[in-house]
Image 1 (spheres, rainbow, N blue to C red):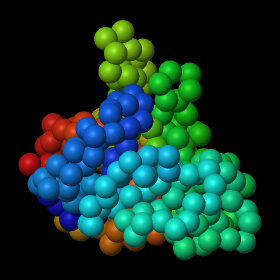
Image 2: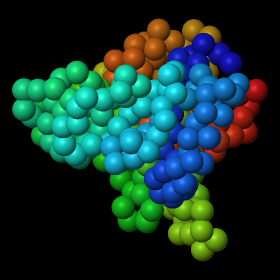
Image 3: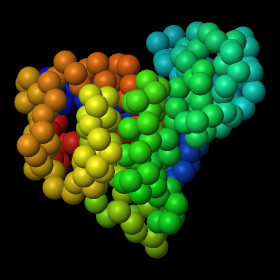
Image 4: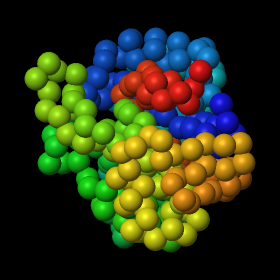
Length: 259
């Protein structure tokens, strides 16, 4: 594991097993999150995604980290809840949670001024998947406005490729964004890259175009120092929500990036 890859994927995945296409039972989701936290790849795991409606049904263990989906103020909250997510535009002076917690708003960037952003990078039907241009313009604008973000949906695989969109035997297939593509593009956006370059990174389908060394990552002829990747992750490209933790990890392993 090189330092540049560790900087890019550390605490990257918010586990959202309750949500499509997995839609696992709550007890199964909690058991899996507990197991992932105790496993060898726990350093890739970030928070557990829960809806506010389920909070009273869950016994939160002391060290668990929760991001909570809400549509209204909900106080008091247990200390394990570290961030909130909402579809409400947040332009009022004090965001949800009375300003106490970071809040991700799944609203157009122009409607966000007192929260973080949330972008949907996948969907259950091909026509609903955002284009590379849409994602690139979001990354460029968010970086220009210094708005940190998280992504959600569709990032089960490391590199852009065609995959089934659900686990059903007759699931539709489409080209899905890769989480390495998205977060490498985000790191370059944070460093001032133009939209055209971000589109090219997002559309990259060759895993060998990405190289991870100790001191830098490279995409074709372009490079970013490991220190800049860590800064981009900490202050800009926070995480992505996935209903599977095992698939993204397996993809990294298949690419030879993870032992």
